[in-house]
Length: 269
Ligand SMILES: [Zn+2]
Image (tube, rainbow, N blue to C red; front, top):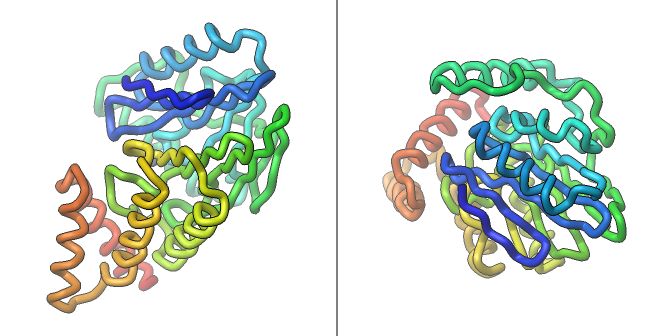
């Protein structure tokens, strides 16, 4: 697992899908986001928190209930849990547990606990809202599109944006609901970045963006992709392929593109 550090922000990147788990020292408290993938990786994040922040109050933020962002929660079950409200999305809960169980079974992975979701969420995210932790104001933004329940977080004092499964430098936009919601979420990110000028932008997967300019360029290209990905016109098809080729793992992005097209054919949105 790769560990990147920028001041008080620590990013643990899994050896699979470049999945980012984040640990931020807020002074008296520590914010842990999406602790993920293999049991040894989740244990390493827990050991890091136990070693460096033994007396800090723990906050756990789950950006969305895709299994790969959830299954480390139990290692931090004593934390104050901040997560999207999935009480109205039984299908998301079911899918999360199903995917978690399936993935572990297919890869012969055993964990110290069975697939299960937190029963009590201390701070339930329904819409845009804020929470003050120590002296740091954390804004939560509803960003549907990849999933229906997604939230991003912006820590004002730290100028740090936790983007959830958006703004990836490793893969093209993965549409889970519909392209209209996805586009609106990208526009929200664009506005936030232009207004706040974050210093660190952490996607769910892939390296954090180097500069604001490259991040804004990536958003423009993603918006363009959403605009043309359904097009049958030859020049648009070429542009889509060019866009996909600009990502480091072409096969994965081609697969995501196929899924995006299939979803659109199914929903017509
Ligand atoms: Zn993910």
